[in-house]
Length: 61
Image (cartoon, rainbow, N blue to C red; front, side, top):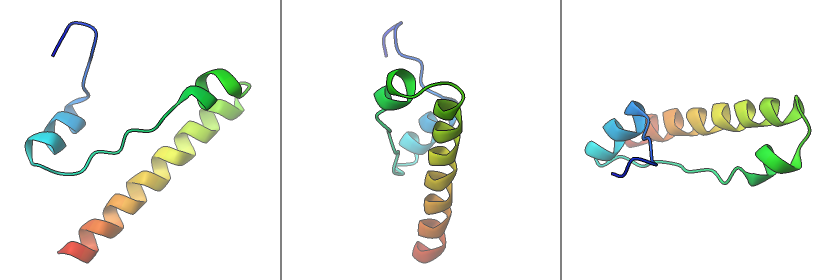
């Protein structure tokens, strides 16, 4: 990759294992919402995505 893109180790591992990766559009969180609601929303969405992944893993195993 280039010097301007940093990929989290967890994402690298998922890509290497050919697993799905979710990328969320974050403009509304970073520019459209006031602090601290933007942080609360980002964390809540991240938690929901994590729970969805766990559900999918259980269904597929």
